[in-house]
Image (cartoon, rainbow, N blue to C red; front, side):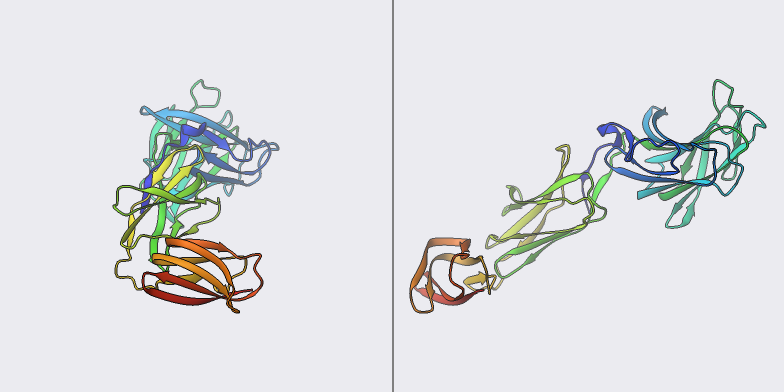
Length: 361
């Protein structure tokens, strides 16, 4: 279940590091556009002042890519590696790796083993587009020209299925090693809903929705209502929170028959996406003529009536406290200045008269 598809990653300024470009810091968190969240960590012992974290861009087969680059220096320990963690699994029509500068100046030997994983299980990969003598043996890229060449060695790695993490194990006897995570700029990613439900209550409809991932790019949700599945209008707005997945909204004035609902997700840049439509049917839903809630109450309470009804509120000694003109639906009564105690809510609808007690605390 999804909203309409979103926009590409490069529409909001391309790739950028969340914490700024780092020199001499061995870990950072990167962001490409507003949709793909990447955390890159480099582990191991390197020459002082490295690695460097940079941003870049590339074109491959007429497609534009944004790149998160990790540059590393001399490192002869095979246990050193760079680890890319994706917030959402992505496949090869969305991302791929590009590794550069595979061969150093002297003694001209560097290698990079590239592996992608989904849930800890390795995903097969294809190694393509070798540049300037680069070769691969299994998952390891090697060979290529020296770093003094005008065209550096490079190779791209495409995974055969979605991956949620990528490990580049880097061994070098000279110079830089560069690992780039390439994200396709024209890619459209959906904003996913795990659930979106409507539940009838005695005097309202409770709407609940849960996101598959934290809605980092969404500013707010607009709840829309219709009785004919076409003429939707807003009945409320709920702010989106960066780390909150579950949300709710209560429609206090639903129609007697079918009630249709949809969500509009408004991005921080004003773009709008819609959910699917859900509905409830209240024609056969049993509820009393009058409902008073919350009860007990404090500073206010709500009266809901399913018919055109006039309301009079009395104190327990019979004094008239408030009169409300005929209405249908819900009305809020402010009671913060009333003495604490019990009151009688009397409703009249034609020949039908009902009373209910409300307690103020």
